[in-house]
Image 1 (tube, rainbow, N blue to C red):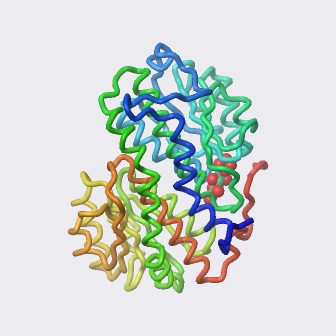
Image 2 (image 1 turned 90 degrees about the vertical axis):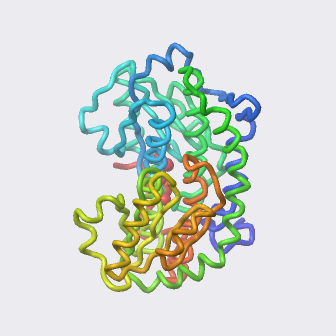
Length: 364
Ligand code: F6R
């Protein structure tokens, strides 16, 4: 049932090009930049009347949503509020009928997410769900549903669900952008999106190298993930993957915040994973890499092919297939999943069922 893989997690990581293709294929019209999303039925008028988006999700699904915040705000010029469902539901959020509540849940049964959905409904927000389970509670209670076609996810650590949630967020950006009538970027985004699955496939060429890098990381007790913009959202997900399956303490930090505290923790040999895929922020990231290197950090950077300057600063670089910077999470998240997997393997951890965690959190 693991299809020859040692763990479900590794199998599911490798299923991502297929999961991405399934989630995108029948919905994306590359020739027009349009999308056909069965289950999503906002009229142009409804889409135009939206004044803000609130995210309702937990864990990895929330980090997909955080990437969505950067993506939607940039493309749709619509404010997106990010917090996790367990905070959202108790902070007396301000919403009304001009609010879109974006609910993201692989299982569709997470207690805090469901409670957040109900809270948003009480305030007459429009509920739009992204979920992987047909007929789940979230799917049933939402006004509009976009399914991710990841297939069943068995490993506790989410991988292919995350990637397809990202894909759903791009599809919805196209949908809302066109419905709101301001999508000059749609055609280019649709074309680039269609190429993403084959770019994800190329990441597996790096797998052996990642395994070797993981053996450097495995003896440590702490690791830092740095990023700016979209890379910060991916850094949070990368750090979560590492801590949940390898029990190594990992912390994601917006690179610009280093000087405001976290830099004090960097000492000789501290592993730092620096995401540097956002070309408009590259110079800033390079100076952050120098900053931690000067304190003795060992830096593994992730950059898009062609950005040779990164190799001059970092100890090691994983070069990822070139992709539109707004789509970079689709390629940068995958090596971080593999890194977490191989670190956990080197440390002899029970990868598919990490201690203290359950696949579906239906209690608060
Ligand atoms: C981490 C992980 C969890 C889930 C979270 C939400 O790898 O899997 O953080 O993402 O418990 O679960 P769903 O998406 O089912 O609501």
